[in-house]
Length: 392
Image 1 (cartoon, one colour):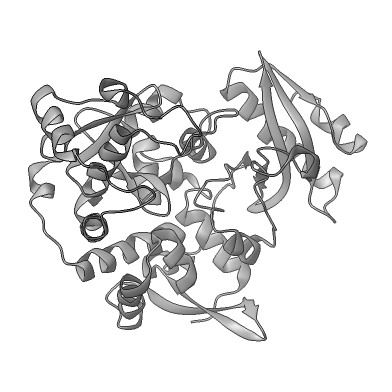
Image 2: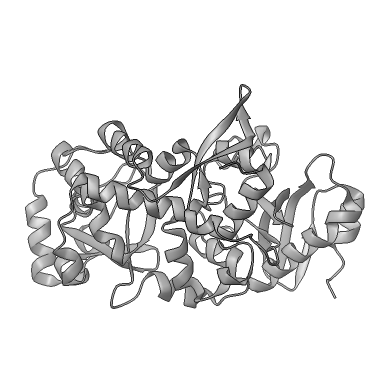
């Protein structure tokens, strides 16, 4: 089946909950299940990334409502490794047993696993859920990666599935026994590596809408034998995705081979597009090569770039409007003022056509985080004039 680049883009936006009213049904709980994974990150500018992901799809949803949808009692989700550190639907617990087994076999990730992890496990078993502060703290006092042995031990036990994080206190993980937090019917499922990856391929495919094999691999971060299982499941149809070609994604003159959710191909995507800033860690754009291919938008997060070398800003968020990524804003907040430290439209786009969409996106986001003023620090003068006017 052939898809135009515009068709593929609209299918992707609908699959991601950013086109049409269906993306708002069910609130943040449904957003997580639609996306399959919401990436977590420690950086908080306007809000933390997992809140921004929900906001981009739902508008001014209450931030506590987002928190309750992710971390609740009884557990509705859990934290684990997918594309990166993610919050995942609790019903997906059995699907990650392939990764838990792989970590158990390696006994190493970023740190050497210390002796004494069984004592930590016994402590959780005896005393109930704990945080790192209950066992001496997370760090040895150095850089952020200089974890204490207790922190390494707790994370290792989480990696292998003995412990699970289904809620947080502040931004601290609460570790508890998997057998106390994960529903028994899910805990009892013992899937093979093949069963896990085939089912996760379907999850990733439905979330992305239309995706190349590379996109699916990036979503799940599978390598070697596990990647081979993924590729085989696509080729033999076990993943439930169908092959499509997108000539507009061509490389070296060849139409890009991709995979699509067959349900997404059954109807034409319609509805109102969201106008919103997008988190750098949103699954819509977390694969930068895919972002360039789908939207013609080259994006680099400059968070770790020295200040004097930044082009667009510290935490630049792409601006989605009309189903396209039309510009960028480096946001900040000073009291009740939303500060656009730097804002720009993409080259070739006219201020007269797109300024109202940018203004709508900025003012709605400002209101959501409790701001009643927007200040533009750096932008094209014509754009600044439009943006500082409060929307009707």
